[in-house]
Image (tube, rainbow, N blue to C red; front, side, top):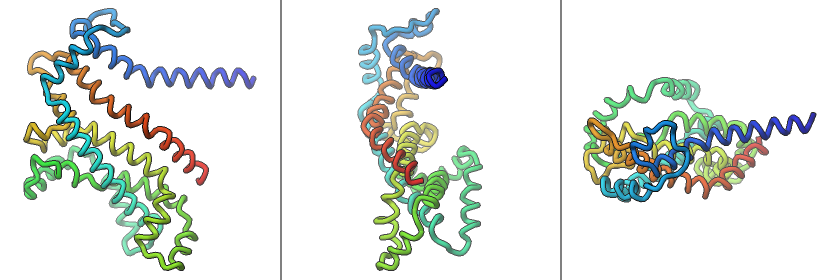
Length: 273
């Protein structure tokens, strides 16, 4: 009985792995094919011979490395600011009492209910008033704190950061910021690991807001530059898919580098909770 349960467990895990990995495999296969081969039936499930030709055409069509650096800068800056401000606000909501705390948190949660598209026009008007249209500041500053991140850190800090530890720090003379930086922040590492990865991927893949706010081709992010590969009447999908593969590779490399630390932080958080 135990063995049959293990077989079912591993079969489910393998099935989940296949379902998760197959889109990346299919992306890599299509990047090595021509557009007619992509449309062929039955679909070709193995790699072709046109990968380097497709990649070279991507480099000819867009300034790939400039857009890659632009995207890396925007995603990194956005992630650092979100981690700082969201952790500070979430920690404050979780461990301190102040006037209007309950209603402020309810208002914060209410902003999560509104579709992001509703804020596009007001946000653009504000950026125009500031003179930030076409600059990276318009991509980074408005998103340096978000409701989801504050809610996530607040929920984690409420149970994981012992109030007794903070009281001991206050007795030792720690001020607000030192309590946050030296005592609470190390405990919040598992939550910060997830929030950092979530924010970085979101900023890396963001398309709509950069498309609206960026006016200079030299400042285009990867997603905007890749969208320019689509033709008006026809689209060379081998070119688009090869560019998409190049845009995904940095995220995969980043995940491989941080996965060990990420998993250990999540495990540590599970033990603490």
